[in-house]
Amino acid sequence: MTGGDAAARFFCADAARLRGDTLAGTAPYGVTWILIEYLAGWPPNGFDGLPLEPETKQLVFNAAHAVRARILLVRRHHRSRAPDGPRDWAVLRYADDGTHRQTWGTWQRDEDLVGIVDALAAPGEAGHAPVVLVCTHGQHDTCCAVRGRPVARALSERWPELVWECTHVGGDRFAANVVVAPDGVYYGNLDAISSVTTIAEHLADRVHPDHLRGYTNLFPPQQAAVAAVLKEFGPAGRHHYVVEDTARFGDRWNVRVTGRTPRSPVHDVEVRSYRTAPRQLTCRGLSMSSAVVYEARLNPI
Image 1 (cartoon, rainbow, N blue to C red):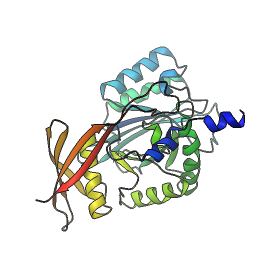
Image 2 (image 1 turned 90 degrees about the horizontal axis):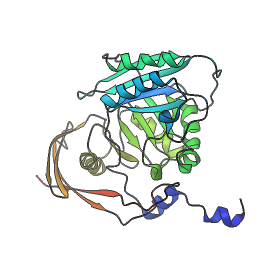
Image 3 (image 1 turned 90 degrees about the vertical axis):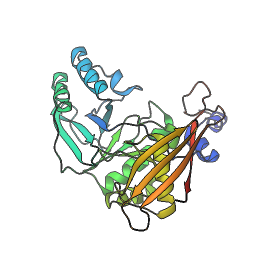
Image 4 (image 1 turned 135 degrees about the horizontal axis):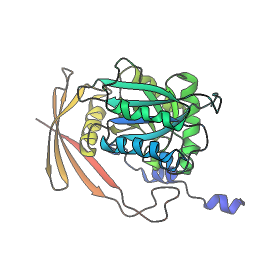
């Protein structure tokens, strides 16, 4: 690549930072994750592109689709396992009451992945530590690898048992993206230093708004409302705020957020949405697309 080619290359995360793209309200909705450890190269479309036994692959896909689960390929940052040895799979769930459920298994043959189907139909076990997922899916988007790999390295050195690299989680322009599951918390715009601070605070049950994209059990306007409350009153635990009511009026929402702390018991938040002008949102995007932005404002009660 010549110097001119390198200078002209487009990086979506750089462009998003220059524009000041808003993070709050950008976490995709979902409360179930399927993790499949896969040590070979990841296809651009992740699980869909794996050369698995067709019947097994279809069974897993159908079971995941039925519960709107996201399937992610994962690997440890240092990839120390033998390529032909047993690999992990997991089903992670976030329940409405805030409890976490996890089921873990191993696979060597493609057919072993049918265990995921059974796990999706079972309640799972409580008491597991959360999983920290760092998107490093360079075949999907260049920024995910360029910005994700240093974050995966830094977090893996600090919490080697909790951290996995993973395939696409959405929001390439916010790389590096980190998901804590099954807590269902998305963080973005991270680097090696800020990621360690952010995850250390998260594990101490203090969610900060600076890098918060949203809670995945909430819809985008609700995510933006909770982020606004956190920005106003400071960091709080993952379950310190609950969305009690949401009313929509066209492109506006009134979201009532109840807190568990004496200084912030109830908040009414007005959220407005609008679409940006068309722009290139991913490194590999061939067309311009607009993004939805959510702006939140606390109203006095």
